[in-house]
Amino acid sequence: MKNYSIKKYEPTDYILWNAFLSKAKNATFLFYRDFMEYHADRFQDYSLLVFEGKKLVGLLPANRMDTTVHSHQGLTYGGLILSKNAKLYDTIEVFKSILKFLFENNITHLKLKELPSIYCATFSDEVNYLMHICQSRFIMKHNLLVLPLKKEYVISKSRRQCINRGKENNLIIKEETNFDVFWKQLLLPNLKEKFNAVPVHTAAEIAILQSRFPDNIRHFNVYYKEELVCGTTVFITDNVVKPQYISGNERNNELGSLDFLYDYLIHEVSKDKEYFDFGPTHENEGKNIVASIDFWKESFGATSVVQNFYEVETKNHLLLDHVFI
Image 1 (cartoon, helix red, strand yellow):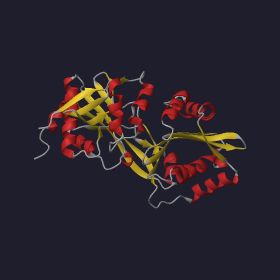
Image 2 (cartoon, helix red, strand yellow):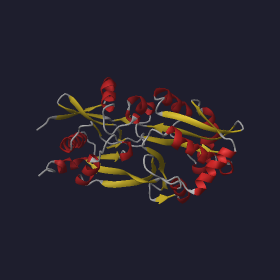
Image 3 (tube, one colour):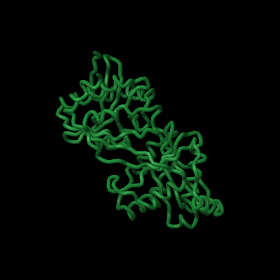
Image 4 (cartoon, helix red, strand yellow):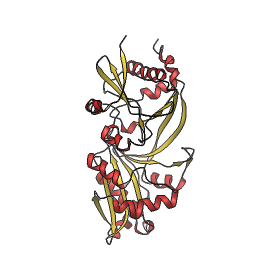
């Protein structure tokens, strides 16, 4: 039997952690420590490293709240990160070791935020399967609208009309690294008015992250006669382009600015990628779909991809003892 051990992340593990990510089959730049630690003051880090003997074989980006460990509340997705050659048997042992470690350290529950399959270098549903074996419960499901860029898709007539309206209005798209104007003029006011909310990142935080990951975080503003009318900050991984923040002024329908911008993102920014992730369209923890947003995203040709959220009791590590027969 292989010998697995678990270690909580420490700053001295920085190089080892990042090196493993660069060769993992289900990791993105969000898991690098330079991204995770921008909000270290908000979360009690409980990230774990899994070793087989002296060899690092798995990572769990995580934070702790009371007797629950989350993977990870500060990230869009999470889960167990595996090497490209990880087999199912090994993954079962790795995950069992994590649950047992948590149980022995008075952690009663582990909450996992699934990494959608479109972000993986190859198929990686092992932990999804193990959630069934461990008798986990679904916390919620997100319905993401995703455009498969390498396959044929159909953009609706109404979307094409709006895109053409943007062209007729001579809208100009500029890639910029100054986030302040977009945050202050569009994003903050719109989130406040529509949802009484604020963005997860401040303009200063996203600027810091962009300086650390310039190829992964890019920002585009749309101008009409030198007036800022629309903008978006996109997160870019090996396979996927995803608008993380998007906002426009009240003239969007008149100018066609939002559709014009998305057309540019899909055909120019995403031209070497596999997928364009429009993100979820829900409210009420995934129980309701905002019909107008869903219609708009699907009119670009996007289709549904589900992201699962699980909660598993750590005592259920015992259920993984006899999976293979």
